[in-house]
Image (cartoon, rainbow, N blue to C red; front, side, top):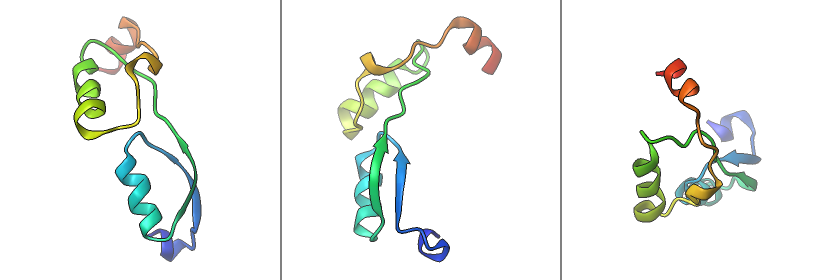
Length: 76
């Protein structure tokens, strides 16, 4: 899709190193990786910890913004 659109370089919002590697292998220059660090809450803390520890995602839970109880109730 990116080749079809003529995109050869981009800034990528991800914590997943495999996405960066895949795009690079396919000839897309990832000029900047922007980490996703918002929305940590008691419901997703273990999930995010597993992504970092077992899947090698580039993130530290200390970098995440704590979601307030109001945000959790509103969204879910």
